[in-house]
Length: 183
Image 1 (cartoon, one colour):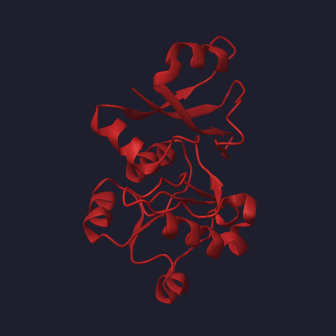
Image 2: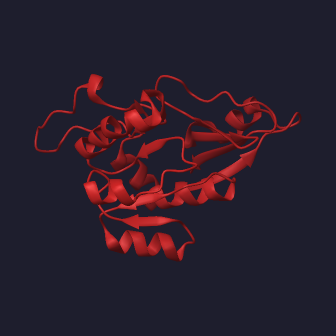
């Protein structure tokens, strides 16, 4: 999901940088033409070496709720609390509890956009695609055409990124490119 989203953002002209502990994921991202760094985003070495120039937000997209929350807390000073986001936590199948909402970043996309659900949708053929809104093809048209099968993620307009959150869904205007999970 993170690679597909990063690729869509990059095509829309947004600077992206991926950080992952899984070297296979990093190699695949690089093969896809994405800027990717191997390492733990919470490690001192990655923090010292990571170039954050031109980046305005952190999107924590791992399947690990605690790692996402820690990354958001750690980078809130760099990006501001309004600039750190994470996927909504999911309850552990072992009966664990989700982290306290007060300790989380802003929740991405919608309350049910948990990592497992996003991965399942991609495995079942959903794709992340970009659609440009115009005066003739409006946000309302986009929503009507996509229906419940489409999850709006982000919008880009004039180089400015707007992130959909559980509390604040997108309402982009004409001229915006909407990046959504469709299918």
